[in-house]
Image (cartoon, rainbow, N blue to C red; front, side, top):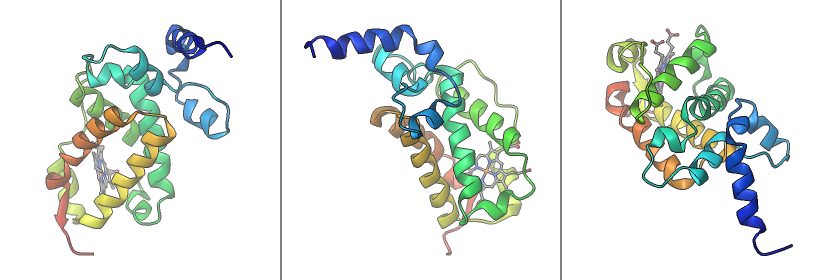
Length: 169
Ligand code: HEM
C-alpha cells in the first residue's frame, strides 16, 4: 500500500461527503461496511476553526446522530417508559433543531422550553445520566470524533439543571 493512500482516502471521503450525510450511515457502519459517516467525514474535512455545526456535518450529520439517539432511548429500559406516548420522529426533529441551533447552525428550535416541558415529569438525575449515555453511544456509532463529541455533550449537559428535579435514585 503506497504511503500516500490515507491522504487519497481523505480526499475521496471529502469529495463524497455530501453522499455520506445519510441518516442510515451509522446502520451501514454497524453492519461492518466502512462507509464514512457524515460527522466523521465533516470533522476531517472542515477547517479546525469551523463551527461545531459544520464539523458535525451540518443538519444531516446532526440528524443522523439524533436518529441513533432516539433509537437508543427507545431501547433503554431505564427511561423508555417515559416515552410511551411520544412521537419519536417529532422528538428527533426537535432535538436536531435544538442542537443545530446551539452548535452555530441556521436552524430555529420551535419546540417547547426545557424547564416547563420537563418539570411535570419530575425527572431524576440517574435518568438524565442514562440518556447522556445513550447520546455517547449514538456519537460513537456515528463515528463522531472526540473533540466534536465533547462539545456536543457539553451542549446536552448544559440542559441538566433545567431538566433534573431530583438526584434521588
Ligand atoms: C438528555 C438531555 C435532554 C434533552 C436535550 C431533552 C430535550 C427534549 C426535547 C427537545 C424535547 C421535545 C420538545 C417538544 O416536543 O416541544 C423533549 C421531549 C421529551 N423529553 Fe426530554 N430531553 C432530555 C432529557 C430528558 C429526560 C432525562 C427525560 C425523562 C427521563 C425526558 C423526557 C422527555 C419526554 C417524555 C418528552 C416528550 C414529551 C411529549 O411527548 O410531549 N427528557 N426533550
